[in-house]
Image (cartoon, rainbow, N blue to C red; front, side):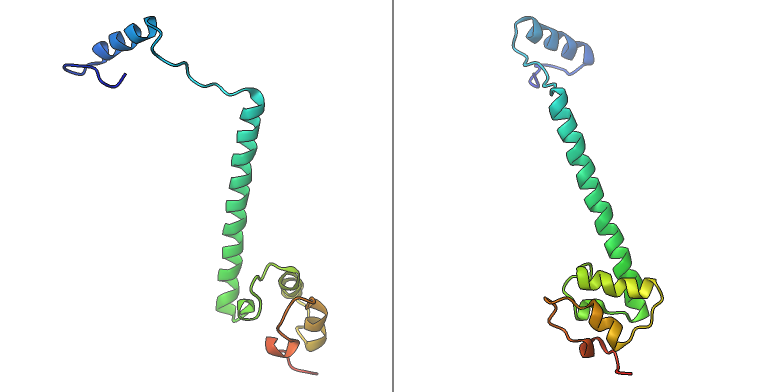
Amino acid sequence: MKNVPGRKTDMKDDEWIAQLGRCGLIEPSYIPNPEVMQLRLLTRRLRSYKQRQTQIKNKIHNLLQPTNIKLTSYLSVIFSKTGQSLLMLFINGELIDYDNVTACIHKHVKASPEEFNVGHE
């Protein structure tokens, strides 16, 4: 379809496409069935949600860094169970002491409460 000889004009292109259509040389457009359309919609929506989730996580990182809350120094993922528990301490305005931090640390975390620079009372 793209190789129309001579000068290109819309009229010549239209005539060429019409001629190809009459001869049956043009494949019909693919129109997906409703199930495929729904799956595509859900896939796009999931991708959009994941992008938004990443944006929000980056915003949280950017909020924590200037306040010298450097959880990334001790946790590989600050949105793990331990990270979320520690973030909830900050959000709820609770006292950040040894006992509260110890209660937040789950079994897979290698850092100890002392490494989080939390002093004993």
